[in-house]
Image 1 (cartoon, one colour):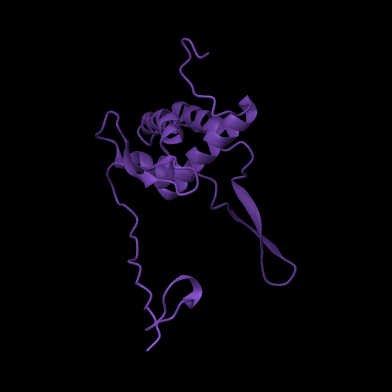
Image 2 (cartoon, one colour):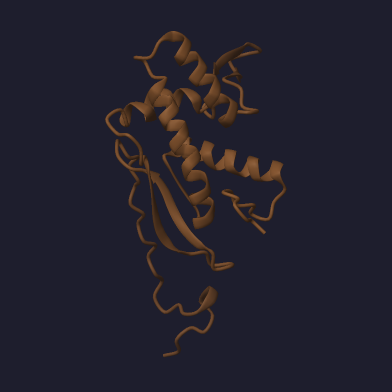
Amino acid sequence: MRHRRAQRKFGLPSDQRRALLKGLTRSMLLHDRIETTEIRAKEVRPIIEKLVTMARKGGVDAPVATRLHTRRMVRRYVDSNVDEFVRVQGEGKSKKIARNPYYVVPRLFEVIAPRFVGRNGGYTRITKVGFRRGDGAPMVLLEFVEGNEPEVAPVAEAPQAEGRRGLFGLGRKRN
């Protein structure tokens, strides 16, 4: 029973549930939108909203101590095992150090939070997209509300071969 409990369990142990929510949060902050089940989106939405609010309050205008503290608070939740810098294979045997593209804290503070400076909440939107084919779970698109949305290239339709019918071209028309 979940009397007076705010969170959903997803049928998972607590450590796996936390890892699932961290992964969804990290993907949302990396890609600005994710497609997931409705229940997962409803569970991860408040987490993302709180992180964006924290990043807004600890932005460039805040005192240095506040900026450092908010970055540490965000990092404590989002990036548990992701390093900020990684060694990249360079020419020869030399290895260069570069920023990890999967480290989302700078992206949250430098790209996402400035988009919502004039907004006091409601940074995300949930749009229903249909049902998953395998088990019929309701699928949704969780995305940020405003700002520069990434461009999605249109997908060209594959040309259909003449006279092919059915699965793998079986059952061809006979003249």
